[in-house]
Image (cartoon, rainbow, N blue to C red; front, top):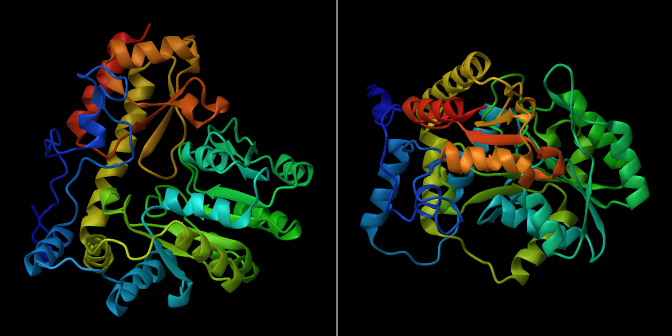
Length: 396
């Protein structure tokens, strides 16, 4: 195990027992309608300990013993902005930053801030299911510019349909998933520019969920606001350390809104729900992760990249009728089971009750996800192999 710069948590093969810790992934199968003995590779958190620098920073803050109201200090912004500059070539300004207790919270806030009851909000299914939920829960209408799976085994955007939906449905807001969850696309700068120019033309606000921006295995992530200067006036960029450093329960997200008017409207909705300061431990964890977690992040990425390659090879060699969609970004692999001839219900039964696996069913991402399963490969190789072999043993 490496001790370079003091980083201790670089053994990603080590299996950490997460049971009986209030862990959503492992402790709530029965409450979620699953058999208690399923192996969970569903929700998007990793089975890896976070950077030891984050652990040490949290321990030091806990020893202080006072947990009163707290706000981000200059060092916090320097850490966040430094990560964005070095990893994503994006210069952010402090006044752009709004902290929220999660990206889904920010999506819901944006829907309320920028649309009215009954308005249409555009998404691109199959997509992360809270996109639809926050739209419906706010009394808005879901409109999908559905992605299509090309002959190159990658998903693509129907740009003509994208613009047509905006015009026909009088769309005011577009929720962009970049990189895309669950289809694992890393949108090119050219694709983002085509989307952005259509949105500029029709005065559509773009809320970009870029929470997976640090997980790129093919291509390069481009921050939507950084594609063209004009896009700064129509966008909200949602980021967080939660996926990158496995900090979801810290409830800390960094939302960047360059346009003052959009930022004011967003803040008004945040204030309306009674949110003021966030938890101090989230602030501490985020600052430490971005300031000192680089070695851990790079080692973790190498491990996850190997898991993705391992999954692809295993699927091709052992899972008849199953195809892994070409993987560009995120640690969530999109498996196409349609070649098995199983119906949606038959596939569900096979995965849950015969393989005893808890994956994310494609149907929750929209109708276009039927016949697919999403599997989280950010886990020790032994866990991943166990899951894949369970599928192999029960396939018809």
